[in-house]
Image (cartoon, rainbow, N blue to C red; front, side, top):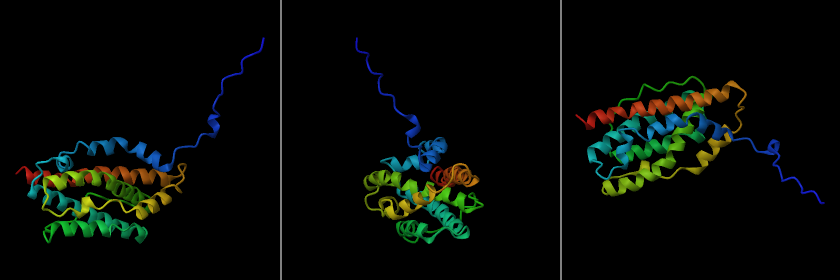
Length: 200
């Protein structure tokens, strides 16, 4: 009697390990998902989003991005990863309404942490495209370049190329994660002043 061949068994030693980006995403997933329930950011997906409410949210974004860009410069991250386009879009959307103080709740100590910060901010451009669809309906006469401009792929690709060179066995990897976690938390806190203004 002919013996049946053993079923094919995958050689798990040849499976490709997860990318550094995937590892960072997994490590920060809970903080990322918390922002989906944020009381202010959630308003951006509401069809009754108001003019003043939208302005206040933009002002909070501007304060945060100004601080982030200052940190990028201080920690000597490449100009190819500048947040200048986002600042230009925010200022254009606000049309001169720039009564904003720099956000002081974001503090980073080294380049790897700054890379984690940029991972969060550039990654958020994917969600911005979804938000933009609602803003066009809720506030059709307002400018919305910040949310309307899709991710600039050359900056995102350049950032990922840096991230994938990070060794998961070294401190720099944990610094990137720390920078991302800190940015997620600080961003959520930075949006709360808008909620206070809207609800007064």
